[in-house]
Image (cartoon, rainbow, N blue to C red; front, side, top):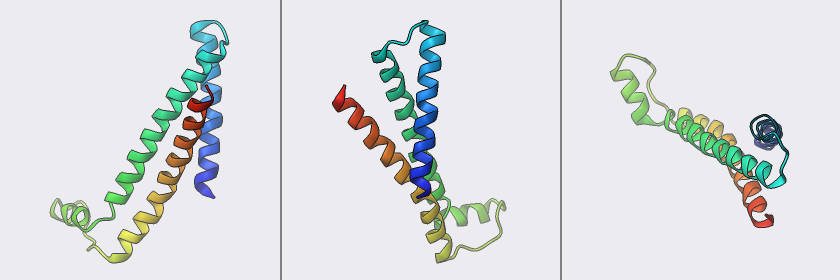
Length: 111
């Protein structure tokens, strides 16, 4: 549910930014231009969500914990629960990215 809410918020933000950029920089509200800006902004958001979700997931691995302990940045030993917790947190962003990817795929098919 959290990923759906996040994807709706990102979609609303992307629509607003598309309208604003189209009006300010191009001084018109051409539908094809707004659609293109919306698709590009959404694709950028998908990329960032996938990267962020992957980074969260990676931070829960045993190798990451070992590297942090070696660099003395984190003194806690790795536990199996750490990996599961990181996967649970990352899943929200990965699902949100998937929803947005589906959204722009539908937009591309309809355009």
